[in-house]
Length: 347
Ligand code: SF4
Image 1 (cartoon, protein in one colour):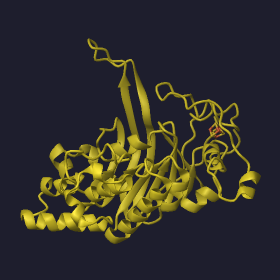
Image 2 (spheres, protein in one colour; image 1 turned 60 degrees about the vertical axis):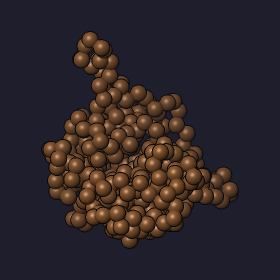
Image 3 (cartoon, rainbow, N blue to C red; image 1 turned 180 degrees about the vertical axis):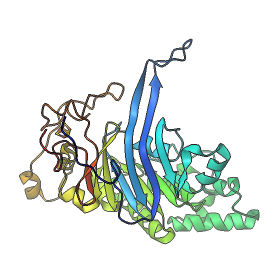
Image 4 (cartoon, rainbow, N blue to C red; image 1 turned 90 degrees about the vertical axis):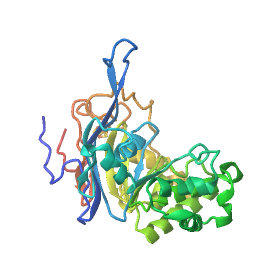
């Protein structure tokens, strides 16, 4: 077996800047399956996330992309400790979250919030917008008295571009974009440092998507927020992200600065994803090479051996089913997990 070149931090695309807010080390999330009513013993595991490592700098937006089922949402939930990871570490501001007691984690939850994909189902239809936004203020004891509560809710509504008089309306009285603004205001209410935005615009019309993305960018600047922005749409991620990570079947396959990954994709899966993104210019669109992937994404219950992408990879060779490629630096600050990428030698 060929020896791979060593790098300082295998598997992690560490930025130069030391102001790291979040570090994910070798994260694993295996869901047991097949445990019957009488037997607690699982018959197998769905490897939703399998050895993912990355860092996020303070004030940065890291975009996480990949097809449905690639593990990006599970990664976000493990970071927030909504799922207890099977293995690996999540380190937030130097504290390892896996080891915190539930009381300590409750305090930490204020720092880390989530914006969900579906603004239709993520808001309680029986609560007014004001109560939805204000509830976390009460839970975390952030307001003293009704007056301060009302003022805070009014401020939050204004921060997300809604009118304070809308506080008494119910979710069904808002449009999709307005509901997502309520979701953003609720996340903002506890003054978090870090927000996992899990497909926050996927359920919205294209014209509304841009408004929500712009709002998230403005709020990031105003409140020095750090985002993990999860999406399957590469064009959306390009607009908002500083760096982009591409996931496939529970693995991080490529990670680089935003423009670098779009200009110079290295991993065959990233190339395929990018070749499917529409280009507004019809001449350029007709000229470019398309990389068509064959077959379906394999089951994470029984992932392929070696490089998990090999059954669908257009350039796979005999070595690919036998070797697991690690995420390695192929260009400065550009990491890819492919045996054929530069620096791996001949396989
Ligand atoms: Fe394709 Fe092989 Fe690279 Fe995997 S390691 S992406 S199968 S060429």
